[in-house]
Length: 477
Ligand SMILES: Cc1cc2nc3c(=O)[nH]c(=O)nc-3n(C[C@H](O)[C@H](O)[C@H](O)COP(=O)(O)OP(=O)(O)OC[C@H]3O[C@@H](n4cnc5c(N)ncnc54)[C@H](O)[C@@H]3O)c2cc1C
Image (tube, rainbow, N blue to C red; front, side, top):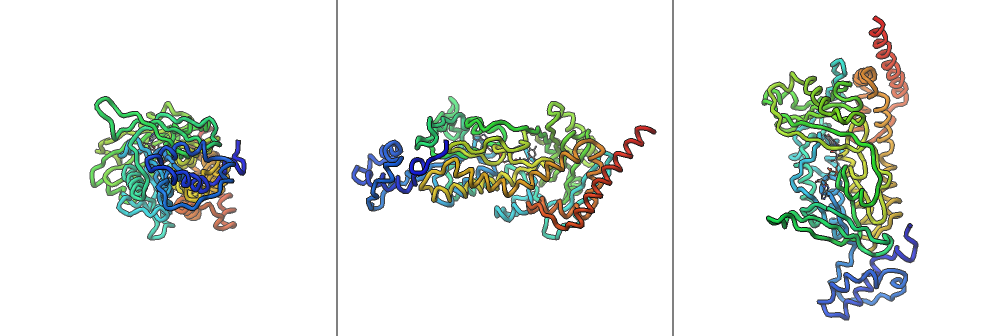
């Protein structure tokens, strides 16, 4: 049920004024009791009629909106940062403060600027991308890049640590704990708090982590693909890929080959519906692959990418093996009551490229900004309709075309080895390279040149037909 004007949408500033007047006539020691009972007494239509009594400075700052962000990855940290900057009371839960999220760690150039990332957290600046076809034909992408343009290669433990620390330095309160349960209020349109249960790892003793609870007014679910917050609000499921990666430490001479180069391999051997990658990091490469349609065979596909790249990986030592789900599309419900989802918890990874870091950070920032504006910097609790009409609507409007374009690209080109061969062939085209890089680096889907677009369409169809004819000739020979 949506909030109704005059009831749940009562501005928090009005509540604060009322409570301040109550607090003023009580001894200071009673202020906490007033704060915890405030909603039953001060929320609702009656509050609006209460004349605000001018007050001297009161310590009842706890009247402000209390937000919990569950998950300290890029999504959660960027959201917490916005809230903290605006002075909103925000608690950031992270179960593992040095978490190394299984990930290729590739980020677009626009993220470096938009999120003011220092150069030191970027391991390598990739300026060439080798696209390698099922028959091992190589298309080198990168000639269209300007000197300052690159794809950033990061290690997630470094990137996530930086973003989290920044949010904390701005005022987000960190809790090193695992959120285990969320008690939803019987009426989410009331002022009743959500109760978060968590294991506090910072205070764990020999007997184990200490179980604790925290009451909040709003929850942001930023806890990744296996989100507990999403389950708690029955956000619905999504289709997901399983992705596997090995970090392989290479001898220095071989690492030089990957100085500014990343590789993407396509072919039914390495994945029926995705690509496999070799992404360089500071002293090792991340080698991985993913699939939605044949998840049980992921190890077979991983073996295949190691075989395809064997000459370049020779002498390498596996230093880490990691795997994780990648969402394929947004969840059916991304905002329920006073809970909203961001990042992988919401399902914001693009098909075909499997990119999610930028969208996680961006959705976190957008949700944070919406909460700040709609709550009037914490003086009012935003409703489900408020958040759906702002953060959710704005995010969809901004990125719908990007998601759709990559969705189409995947369904046309990742079908079989013939279409994958055409895909790599097309990547030789300078116009394709420019459009592809621009849309990746700057997150824009633009029609750069209608005449070139038409030519590209003809070349695409031509290439698909050519590969199909070749394959048929091979079959009848
Ligand atoms: C193998 C692989 C390769 C990838 N490569 C790329 C790539 O190169 N580029 C790219 O853009 N994207 C890539 N992605 C996708 C990218 O990793 C995600 O989209 C991104 O991490 C989403 O960020 P997030 O903050 O939403 O979630 P996450 O990064 O998953 O962060 C969630 C955080 O919440 C914490 N958490 C979870 N549950 C709880 C709980 N109950 N209590 C407390 N804390 C909790 C976790 O410890 C974690 O730190 C890849 C994914 C995989 C699996």
